[in-house]
Each structure stands twice: as C-alpha cells, then as structure tokens.
Image 1 (cartoon, rainbow, N blue to C red):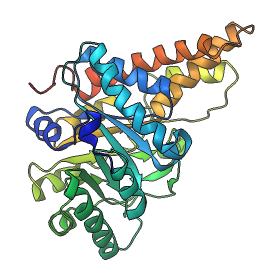
Image 2 (cartoon, one colour):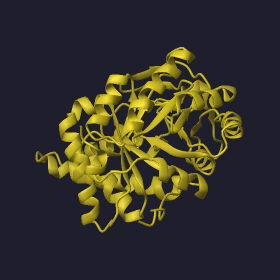
Image 3 (cartoon, rainbow, N blue to C red):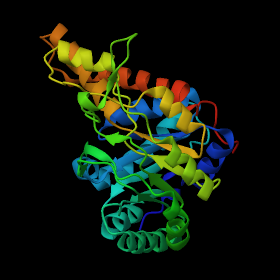
Length: 335
C-alpha cells in the first residue's frame, strides 16, 4: 500500500471547494507519456494553477502502473524544481470501470479515483460507487461518481447516444454513495468526433460548424438540487481547428472533427463545475506538431527532434486552457 501523501500529491477536496467559491474550474489533463506529463507540469507551474493528472485504464496499461507511481512522484519534484514550492497536483483515475481497478489505483498511490457506473442500472451504480467510496475514504482518497451517459469514443469508454443526467436523482445518489464529486451529462462528448456535421449548424461569420448547445438547464437543475457540490464535465475538448488543419495538411485524415466551443466551457467553469476534463486536444496538439516537424525535416530520426516541438505545442495549449478557458491561473492555495 502506497499513500499518495508519500508521493507529495493531494486529493481534490480543498481545490474543488476553492474553485466553486472562486468561479473557475481545475484543469484535468489526461496523459500517457513523459512529454505530456512534462508539458502539463510546466504549464501549471508557469501559470500557478492547481492541476489534475488523469490516467485512464488504458493509459495505465500502456504506461505501466509501477512507472506511473514514480512518474507522479517525479512530477511533484519537477514542479518544485520549476519554483512551485508546494505543488497542488492530483493523480486521478479516469473512468474506472470496476471496484478492483479503483482499489488497485488507490493502493498504488492515486489520490483520487473515478468509478464510472453510469452504464449500470441506477441501483447498481449506487451500490458500486458506494463500495469504492467506502474503501477510498479509509485512505483520504476522493471519489468521483457519474450519473448520465456521454456519447462518443475515448479509450475503453464508448456510447452512441447521450443520456442526460436527471437532476431529480442527484441528491439521492450523492447522499447514498458519499461521493466527493459528480460527473454529469449535459451534451459534451468523448473523443475528437463529438458530433456529426448533420447535428451542427454553420457559423455565418466563420463558416465553421457549431455543435448543438449544451443542456445548461440540466446543469442549473443539478446546481439547484446540490448547491455548492463539486460538478465535473467530461468530454470537454474543443478540438482546435488549427491543429486539425495541420494534421490534415501533413498527411492526416481527420474529417469533421468538432469539439465544444470554449466560451461554453468558460460559462460552465463559472458555475458549480469545478473540474473539466481535456484529453483529445492534447492528442491533437502532439500529433499536429509531430506530423509537421517530420514533413518539414524528413531526415529526422532522433525522437527528441520531433517530440520536443510536440511537447512545446502541448504546453502552449495547456496554458491557453488554464488562462483563457478554465480561469485557474494564479489560484494556488496558500500553503
């Protein structure tokens, strides 16, 4: 059993409380490799933002759970080297699909876990989430539950339709499970292909496709039922069109990749939404930089030659999200 506190990590409890009070959201960036992790920590340190490092079940298998434990500890020490005296970094399991997966992550030093029982019947979701909470809270690990289903595909998580969260269920769910935060469904989607062109309208000024409006009425209903309770949005990448265009220019084939407009996310961040998950935007930034670098420098074969531009491009994207979308810059707690 490894306590996250031994690794210098924190859980989400205090940072979420401050985010709700301050009207901003904590960035939850998924990572799979060292370059993503470096870029996240550099961006958070430079902007003085708390940050959540997210790992999906698939990413954990890819990176190896033992290496992840040391990468997280290394991230804390790296942050200190960058001048971040008391790093506020969470290591979070994204979309845990079973009690066993959540328990394994807790035992390996994760400071927060999500148990996604949203695909189950309501009572089964309650029972599974409660079981994870009871185990996690013994070690002061925070737990995110989920009500409602997001459409889209990302790693092992997939659905071909939305099931919006029912505000009338949230009080019962939170009370019976004891979860610390709740992911809800209001129309965001997983992956880079969040919407079909047929679902969108065309912006007459830019000519870009605009997805259907998020169900802010559902969010407002949840807030009324659970005032001051931490709410989470998944599937919130904006799918920057400049990155999509670069990928396609240099040999890619991303067709009709459409994301969530950033002003909508900023509006959500000013509410009880205190954690916004971003994964696809990082993948796009990394892939765009690698494709462009290799196309312009066909003689490159040292991975550092194309991974450094990729890391720099991801860092630029992370800083933009922190400062211009989530509003978490300069929000470090006084320790």
